[in-house]
Amino acid sequence: MTLRSISANSPVRRAHWHALGLSEEDLRKPKIAVVNSSSELAVCFAHLDGVAKVVKEAIREAGGVPFEVRTTAPSDFITGAARSGSYILGARDLVTNDIEAQVEAAMLDGMVCLTSCDKTPPGHLMAAMRLNIPTLLVIGGYQASGMIEGDHVDIEDLFDGGVREQLGGAMKHSVEAMTRQAVRGPGVCAGMATANTMHCVVEALGMCIAGSAPVRANSEKMFEAARAAGRRIVAMVEEDLTPRKIMTEGAFRNAAAMVLAVSGSINAIKHLQATAVEGGLDTDVFAIWDEMGRKVPTLSAVRPNGEVRIEQFEDAGGARAMLKQLEPLLDSGVVVASGKSLAEDLAGATVSDPEVIRPLADPISPGPSIAILKGSLAPESAVVKLGIRDGSRPESFAGTARVFESNQDAMEAISAGRLQKGDVLVLRGQGLKGGPAMGGGASFILFAIDAAGLAKDVAFVTDGQLSGLCLKGLTVAEVAPEGAVGGPIGKVRDGDRVEIDVAERRIDLVVAEEELAERDAVGADFPVPAEGWLGIYRDSVKPMATGAVLSGTRR
Image (cartoon, rainbow, N blue to C red; front, side, top):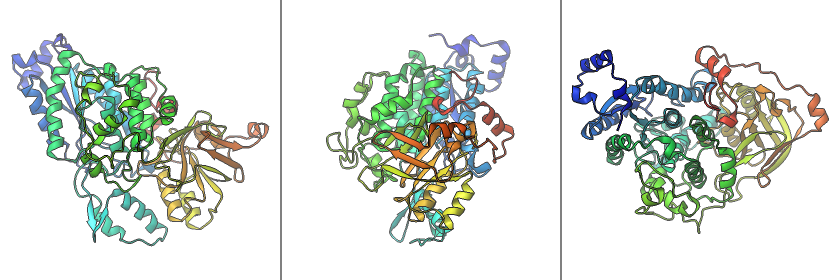
């Protein structure tokens, strides 16, 4: 085994490491980065220093030398406060570049990434593919939630309640009471929102210790997975088991199947596409999604899809049990972090509650839970989340466009009762460049439509993204090309007819081609100021087909 950290050992480098307390023997050992996004700003990351300690101890016991390094720590509800939430997605790529600037620059031999809130899992996966050194992700776990007068309350209830209060709606419990009970400890949002979706994706890709996701934050199960990762990463360095050997196209198909089966967050699609691009794979995740969506039914109904709590999903066997149920549809020959095939890794997997994680022969609802649409309004792609397909939400719609250039204007129209049955609310300027970074708060519009009692009677179309907590009515998001770069959504006018047909995977603007060609797209006036990092992001971000990677990245 040739360690690149040893080949880079210059006298001054050795001197620095001796000053840190490393012995001559330590200098000959594998050097492992422990990538930590610990932050006192947000509970998502507040516990990770304790996790890092456990991982570092295990690395030392296994014969490696750990080096803890820090990255930015994006948390939707904290670092989404400024610039209409534009820093949230933009920070994903900062995580990736933070890691490159420390781990790659130091020529370390492997890394363990402590992965938590929405943007750190994809940031870690992207960095793993870019650096292609042995890597494991440790799942940071989900937060405990509380009770009010016998009712369970979590962050989804608070999100919904906050919008209802703003619109003057009636609520069973006050927002103030929910604020004090919705989050009762460290970790990510409870429910199958983006963070827990991405944690399940990490397991489906084979990039963590089997059985790691989802997991209660600070539980013994979480710490045991952390210990196992610390031990395993040293062996992976010795075996030269690198991310590009694990995250093959077959692994991406497995990850798509996982998200479809749990009806996870639509954000997983762009994160997976970005990860593939970072690894130089010629893989179209959007096409994989459409293919797998025609095969994979919904097998679990964790909130916001149904009433199953994330704790019940974990206790039923979690992501590993879901992979076992999906096994006939998976590429089970792919290699996973254990060094075995997925089939070998799943040999002992069991499902503790087949009502919570259903078998393929008895699904909760037919697929797809998430579909990719195309058409004259979205020539490249658009995403619709269907969730549990029980007829409670429309899957086709034809109506009259009501166009808004800002989140605030749309909220005011809904609050004033100006949105009518049969309308299609079109919110643009929310995309990768227009947001920038898909800021703008499109998710609040969706909750507002529901609070106004219009979820079944209007459709919502946007070039922005949605929170993983969002599942109400018929909503088409991430329309590409976005309005700010001249996409057709920028040519929609009030009164135009918009047609959505999920069965046909279509979303169309019913305007004559000649008339549409003569229309000017709404210009990219960029209402959200973007200097500094956001300015760099706006200038550098590439289209959604790349997963929104930045210029300079592969592809």
